[in-house]
Amino acid sequence: MNDAAALGIFACLSNPTRLQILKTLVAAGPDGLIAGTIAQKIAASPSRASFHLSRMAEAGLLTAHRQAREITYAVDFSAMGALMRFLLQDCCADNPVVRACCVDAKAC
Amino acid sequence: MNDAAALGIFACLSNPTRLQILKTLVAAGPDGLIAGTIAQKIAASPSRASFHLSRMAEAGLLTAHRQAREITYAVDFSAMGALMRFLLQDCCADNPVVRACCVDAKAC
DNA sequence: CTTTCATTTTAAGTCTGCTTGAAATATCTC
DNA sequence: GAGATATTTCAAGCAGACTTAAAATGAAAG
Image (cartoon, rainbow over all chains, first blue to last red):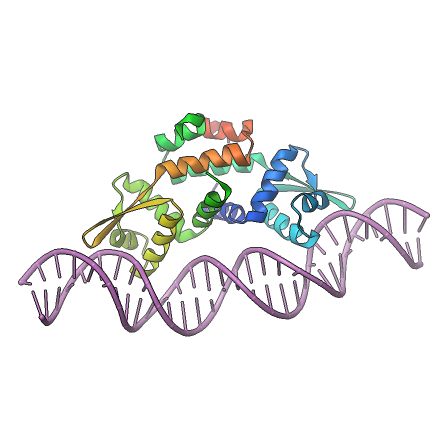
């Protein structure tokens, strides 16, 4: 993952609505949810949900699959993993304190 | 770390200048650097550097210590660690794929 | 073929963030 | 105290993001 990709994902995560979407989709598991259901769960208009879902998909944080007129969005966990790696490796130079937090909850 | 704190840090990381500052300060190590040196290293005006450094310190990403007229900024690695933990735990529900990326580079 | 449904797109308005340069604050040195 | 240095603060302008509601697209059902 390069800087530009990471910047895009950080921009995604810096919005409350999108953070809510991410959590909702993580809870939904690998099958994801269709756009309408996501909008309902986060109490947002279809238009607003679509706006944020598009951004997240464009940033590579979500995958989108159309089935007829329904679009299923799911978290791309490999992208999240790559982001974690970027933070730990490229940003923090493999800092031991930071690394410990990933491995063991007590470290934080 | 709660959602609000995480949102603030993500907002910090979503700016190229601030990402550059973070990397510069990580490379500098735990002693950090004074504001003027940071501005030089990232080729930014003192005013611009100060703007971003303030934001990062306010978000909890950096610590600031004044010694006479010089202000030394350093990365708060515990904050970065807490952020990693937030991503892994609160956002990704301890997803195995994401977790593996933190532990082993080959997983990504 | 018309209607209905799911979603996106568009347009307008508001708000926030970033940059720049000038001015202000605080400290050191002579 | 006067001048130089380090940093911040302020003000103005611009660009981009978010929200809302309405219109448009595309597919299903009758």
